[in-house]
Length: 318
Image (cartoon, rainbow, N blue to C red; front, side):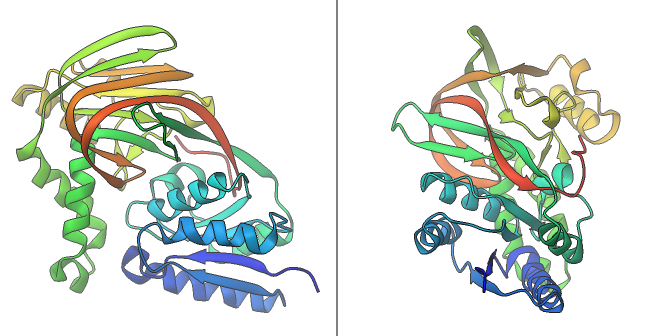
């Protein structure tokens, strides 16, 4: 008998959607008479620990891709867990979160049956671009699938997490609106700061910044279209900066993000692409990594591109 198919699932993701999708996946695996072993996450960073334990259990010998069921945060923990163990274990991902920004680009409309069939018939493994971030202050390395941002985007994610825990949003199934509610709440609390940016050796300076984000995915916070120049298939980083923030600039940004989608025509939005970047912010600001909130701190982070193997259902949608 071969090794079982391993599943890592956050059952509470998406207001319980993760648990429902897990049942659908295991029902399909039983239908195909496939053995499986499920690991459930119970707390923040648990998925990262489970990945490290799984590497020890298998000694790094994985016969199949590992199935991941959860949101962007779960997926973020998984790739960091495997990479910290020195392995790039292929993943088959089924989105079950509130935001699902990774899935908007890389695995839209993927059903549990399609995911299982992709494993059985050994569909092509694609190398998905990810961000490798090196913190120059503490020499810590982190990896992101979507983005690493500072300012308003982090505030939105923080407020969304607060709203998600409120009985009103849980009782009436309003969990899909938490990011919109977070945006409305955060607009009255915008912190403005300066950013020093280097892209492939070229230096830039921005004043009165409301958002600075290093991205490989144009979406943020449950489908907010933050950048119209970020193209995942290009395998380039995109530094997106919303600067010179005034009331006029805020209305301009809202119009372009939600209506016209022509961010590159705005005098308040800069989008710079490159292979290597460094971001410096000399005052404490809130941060986010794939939607997971980072406590206020100074910022001195260097970025470069990396890749991670996924079994995908179709080409990316930018």
